[in-house]
Amino acid sequence: MKIIAIGATGTIGRAVADALETEHEVIRASRDSSPRVDLEIPASIDALFDTVGKVDAVICCAASGQLTPLTSPSDDEFTLGLKGNLLGQVKLLRRALDHVRDGGSITLTSGIFQEPTPGSSFGALVNAGLEAFVRAAAIELPRGVANCSWLSQL
Image: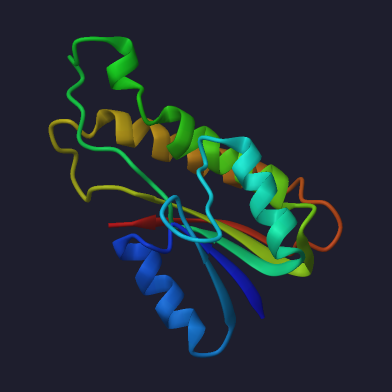
C-alpha cells in the first residue's frame, strides 16, 4: 500500500511511519520535511497531493499546541490551535477524498488525557469536535473510500 503519514517528524507520527514502513510504501510529510505540508495552509495540502498522486491511505498525526488556561489573556490565544488542529484536519480529509484509491482509508488523530487537567479545555474542545466530525463524515464518504476513522491517543 502507498500511505501518506502526515506529521511524520513528530514523536507519534514517526512511530506510526516506522511501523508501517516494514510492509508499505510510506511517504513522510510534515512542516519540516519534503514533501512539506502545513495543515494551516490549504495550498500546501493541495501541493502534497499533486506531488504524491493517488494513495491507498492517509494518516494524520500532525498536531501542535500546548496546554492553554481557560483564562488565557485573549480569545485568540485560547483558540490559537483551532485552525491547524481541527480545521486543518477537516481540510485534509476533504482534499484527500479525491486522491485516496477505492477501498482506501483516511485516519485523523488527536490526543486526550485520561483525566482532565488544568489547561486541557481547549484540547478537549478540538478533540470532541474532531471526533464528531469524523463520525458524521464517515457516513458521507463517496465511492470506494472504505474507512474514515478517528484515533484518540493518550
